[in-house]
Length: 184
Length: 290
Image 1: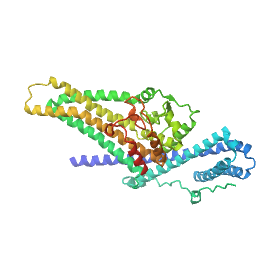
Image 2 (image 1 turned 180 degrees about the horizontal axis):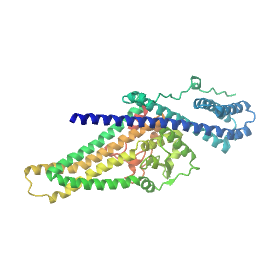
Image 3 (image 1 turned 60 degrees about the vertical axis):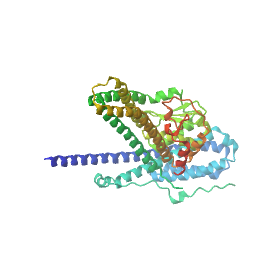
Image 4 (image 1 turned 135 degrees about the vertical axis):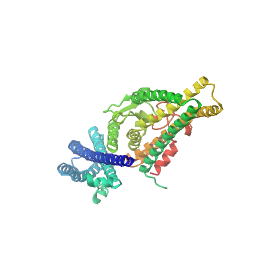
């Protein structure tokens, strides 16, 4: 008689663990989706800040047509990018262009003193930080997800739940090279 | 230099703090046995229930109002979002790194570099920094301090320390009740009862001291854990190391004893074993290895 109780107990325990892990997987996937959405929000914010920035800059740096065009084009690429991977790539190009712009702005003390310019510079800097943090959190989420998926007992359950593997957000090889600053 | 991973640090310190709390549990059980032998099992249950009720009520009131109590005791004011834009931006960035919602931000007027976080859960969290912190630290160092505070919130440290306080409070109450009821003991007990009485007496005096030391050790482990979690958010220990180095020059701050464990750096001087915070040097050494 006792044997039935023991077997019953094991079955119940097993079912609880199975369900518990399912919920854990769902929770991890939701966190990952959330962090992707956050990245999206910050990318949009960056794109929105650029026109205002360019208005300030054009007033003082009329002749720096090269860099102004570069930033404007980078912004266009960001806005028109299709999926998130494309947007992140476009943002990395924009970040490169912006750092060149701010380096050049060092030669224009009147621009540097302009409150609007300084505020926009700070805002752009903090949105870039937020994107970096969101990407980090996204990758952390992928790591937790993979850990749950590849360790026992999650490993046994994962195929039953039908959750596939997920990719980390990568930086492409070309983007790893630091932007070359030209001082003329 | 041997590198340590912050993941390992976080896991190790969490494990150790749970282990230490279990020690408190064991002390309660031992104390209980001693008392039941000296008196009777029913008497011990009676004391235990009183202890649980009082300790829990006292701690839960403190826990639920921890944010209001702490903030009003240092005269903190809400941080103006426009004036302190960078402060808000830094915290917001860390909410993305940590996955916790945006806490309420407060400022306290004090030239020393320090900060604290409190609140019963991440949805009701509060972070307060001194004016000295905003003036004396650069952006990365400020974010290091903020990351440490938000680590406390994300690790549910306030809840954990409250739980520990409830257990330690119970030991204190049990011991107190036992010692006081010594006089009312039934004098018909035989010799073996007397021995347990002496053991119980010794335990009742030592137990509160031991559990207090354990509570302080737990607090220190959670501080190390918060440092390591902060590195996990920032992915570099540089900011934290810079902030801790600058804090070496801090003067003492007058704060109430009950909220002094919540601060980033020890506000007052205390010997290491009796301190809620690990020594600055040790914290810096560990961070340098990450």
